[in-house]
Every structure is written in C-alpha cells, then in structure tokens.
Length: 196
Image (tube, rainbow, N blue to C red; front, side, top):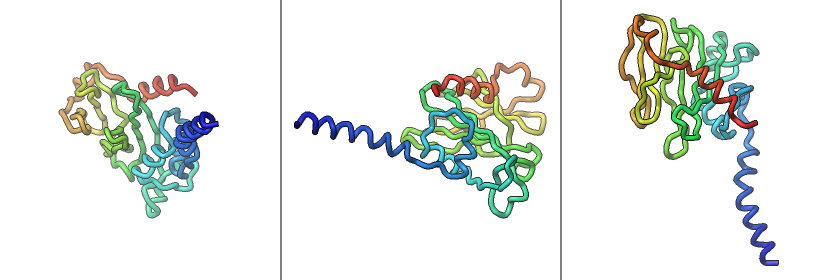
C-alpha cells in the first residue's frame, strides 16, 4: 500500500510539469507565427517570442501581422527559422519580417532569439536586413552572421558570449569569396530532423 502511494506521488510529481506545459494555449499571434514550423519550443516559449516581437494581427490572411493598431494599413508576413547553430540542443530562432513601412529600403527586418543561461529567450539583432548567411568563421561556438541589405557592404555580426554585436563589414566584391550557408537552408535541414 505504501509503495503504491509513493509511486503515485512520484508519478504525479513528474507528470504535472508535463501536463502544465501541454495545456498552455498559444496566443493568437504565436499561433499564426509558428503555424507550419517544426520546432522543439514549448508553448510558453512560443508565446514569449511572439510577445517580444510585439506584432498584432492585421486581419489580412496573406500578410497577417502589423506593428500596432495604427499601422494595420501596412500589413506584413513573417518567416520563423529555427536552428541549432552551436549544436547545444537548444534552438535559436530567427524571424524575418516586414515591408518598406517597417524596414525601409531593405524591405525586411531580422530578429534572432537565443536562450540565455537562465533559460529565457533573449532578442538579438532586431533591425532591417535580409535572412543572414552563417559564415565558416565563428566565436564562442556561434558562427559569424553576414546580414545583407541595400548598399555595397555587408555587416558581419559576431557572438561575444552574451549577444551578437557588430564585428566588421565585407565589401560587395568579397562576398562571393566567403564560405557561407544561408540560415534558411540551415533551418530547413534542422526542421527535417526534428522527430514528429
């Protein structure tokens, strides 16, 4: 009898966090943002990333997001690209979004969410740019990121152990010489290997 009681208590102790995690309802923005995205993120993490982005729903099925209620006339789409760039088993989440209203001449912005030591996703980047290329060079386990946009030079961002920061620029003529992989391709491969 005591053994059954102890087993029941242990089972309840271990299953409650799992049940609580599975019962988290996605916010409307998180639901649309992560639709058709293969990811290991929990519902709470998806909601947190959506909240940090600050998007609202625009009411436009093809361009579902807006920055705020005053900019609903300028809706935009978003692409979520999960990766594991440093192979530590924790996802990094790139979000490419926007239009000329949100991002000027570039037409899109790029945000990157990386989990910190405390287990919270922290926003990196967050400025106009196209989906980055991961370069063959790296620092503290993360690849350098080349982020394109209008102009003849490309900024390279380097991980400093806590965040990505501006590192150097690459001239247009040197771009083709770099060993690089587009984050979209990395994300596609990563998502194909997530058990369903």
